[in-house]
Image (cartoon, rainbow, N blue to C red; front, side, top):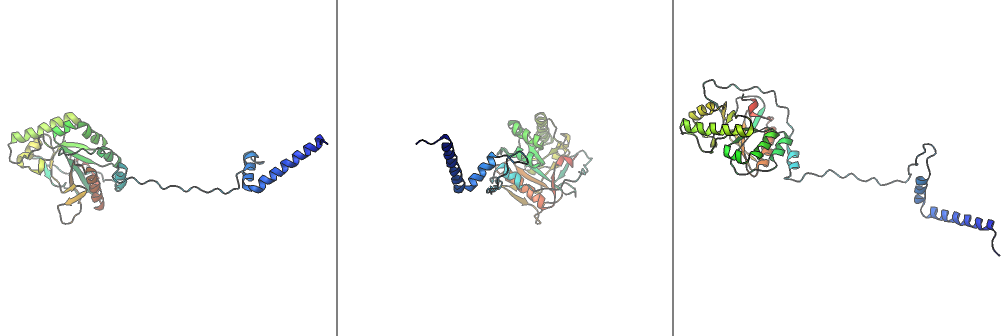
Length: 286
């Protein structure tokens, strides 16, 4: 006998009810999630938050910069107090340039200088100077400056200052006035053309100079001839005093060599340990 339509409907309803109860019993959480997804909240008209506890993803620690990368060098730079307003040092009025191993100042500043020896051009230096706000003074001989003008101009744009280191990078001491003037003025002329500013500071190659050097440098527009008080090479500061501390007014010397990034960082750390702040020479020699 065939079932009546009413009985068939009743059987279907019973079957659906059993299936729903079976699904709910097998996975109550799944059932609850389905309800939550399908039924709006009666109060807000938006889906009711699930009552199922979800695992909280653990936050990944920030990746550390790889040693030797630009990010690593920047992360290693100490935080310095602001440099005090500069008090320019007095200059001689005798028609010769001043000569200093260190600036005669008690202000808590020291000075980073880089001489060009034509040995290397580390590519990240300009970006490092820019991002770490390193005040550097570059003493360049004019042929190297002309050959690598784009490289040095990038450091200048980053905050560096270009100064004079002769044309041929040979010792001046004992040479005639005319010879020394050609070396100093010739480099000053070329550097001005390349970088848009005439140099006001001069460093003789190897630090070798005499009274004629001071006179020729002055006649070429230099206010001071500078030596140094510490050298930095391959990431190590070499002190010339037994105290092994950077003093106010000290001048640190390094070169454009493969380890220049390490030298800059070592100089910054030594200045910081001494309670000083790096500053620009041209702010103090005017």
